[in-house]
Length: 452
Image (cartoon, rainbow, N blue to C red; front, side, top):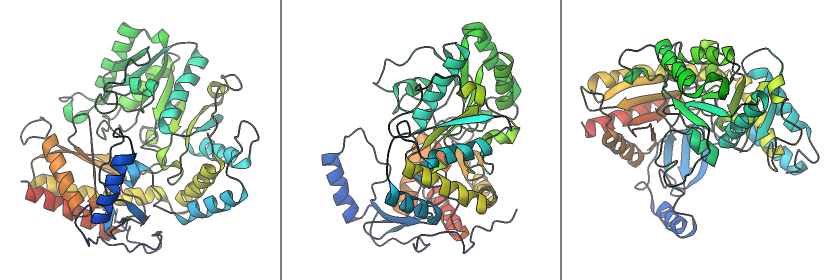
């Protein structure tokens, strides 16, 4: 496939699509704001790159010092349709002029219903579905657990190694990584069990179905399948390191759940909404989850999340059991309808695949030159490289940090991730011009050269 992401009709919000540095990064105005942040904001709220943004669009962030930085993170997969996408802006502006809130549980409005209708239509499977709207990914996952327990009348929840599901008490229990997500915050919610995932780069030749057999045997012998309400898996793991399971693992886990009356939950909070070249990453293996949790890319930057699933499961909860004061806020719903409309009208899945077609050959060329790149993985505009000590599987988190620092200093917003802190993840907005993608990769290549 030939990359065509330099199309002139992709929205830019009037921002010049160029990398331009007029100060050191961070610049003096950003540094001053960072000092204010230190004095006003809890130290528990960390910042990856302390440049303070004043405008963004296309593939560029503009900071208070007028530096133009290439955005390879999309706010952690949130601004998939770009910052200030015109469809999102128009919907939000119209809605805030009419009303900003009533609480759907008190006096409802059409936008909430329309978002649920869209989710029921777009998510995998042609069965009858229902949806419920929330504020954050963690809230969606927590409600998926509530729904599964109400439906099955069981209590145990199974998750997999390297998984990430949020920062609330229950979702911290579901999340694998201790620092920074869980450290010092326990005790955590009970009846959560962790089983092996498929991590092809580190599984020493074991295939996806073989890893699934290990996981399901653990469930049968150590937990009891008859006690399990839900199995929750990310089809591509996010914070765990953009781990793409070996073919057959995800579907085998779903089949096991079905055979044992377990609700299979696909956590698509990071991988959903055209990020991987499909509307949802579950579609790659033809898996139809019982429940699917979504957030991040759903609303172009506005806070919104959802649980969508089989009608009989979603309707098993008593009236009043789901909801929240702000869940499905009308402004966020308007943003979501605009974002979804833009994705459909602009074939967002094709845009994601074009990004993959451009990036993967460049990354493979780097891997041939720099043996510290142990693995290249991902799909669509959700890609990663794992860094190791050459000739080994030993993680090289120090190199990842050094490369990240270099990219930041040279005007490219990059993100590291992974259980071992040694994974570079790439989440460019689908509105990223081809030339900027190429330039970002060139800066990364220069970072490798500087630290070879």
